[in-house]
Length: 145
Length: 145
Image 1 (cartoon, rainbow over the protein chains, first blue to last red):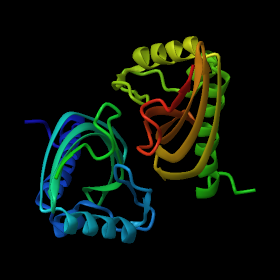
Image 2: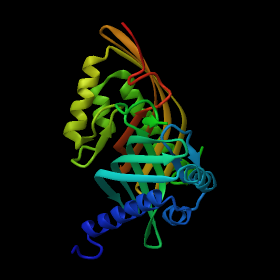
Image 3: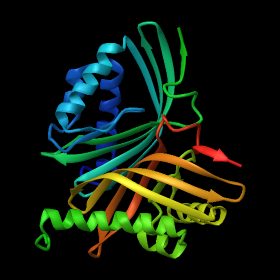
């Protein structure tokens, strides 16, 4: 166990917030996703292959659309690395995403940067840059229909 | 002019640091690039299509390799957006990169997230995630040989 407030404990808090994001993503649960993000007009999200979403309204709507068009998702992450600078922190990790939707499925390898800020003692996601790895098959990955 | 220390002035400082990065990149100048980055073992850089570089030594070496193999580079950026949280800040922008190297050239459209921290009053780059846009031609862009 790390001492509360130690750098290791704070890093773990950030990793826990990052984990909550992936749990919400895999559950396709908008309520959980809402709890992960800061609801302000400056937050930003770059889904793989999409234009940048700016502000919580746009970000929320994009998750709603993704969750509506996806019937199942499995996400494993590897190599999570965290840096904390005051009330801001970011996680770099690799995602292995298998999505099942009407008509097929896709497998994508994604490089992600997730940025969090601490508000009232809780780390909230404020920025996400998710980009498919260039070596992955074109765009969303392999699709079998 | 913004008042010194105002949110607008601080955002401008970050945008100036971001501009210095692109000036160093376009000049293929390792000295300028060294001045942009924080020289610590936790900084990270994800060049388009590369594995993550961790620590200033690796990051510096990667720039050295890129600059050595490139004879000319033109970079224009668009839609720079900045968020500042205490001593940390990040810029999201789109890059249009034309590289000339032995045997050909490439044109790449890149989505970038550049993170800075303020040390001794100066904003230093500590993290960069640069990923080619999926709609760009395969990998590094169009190559004519």
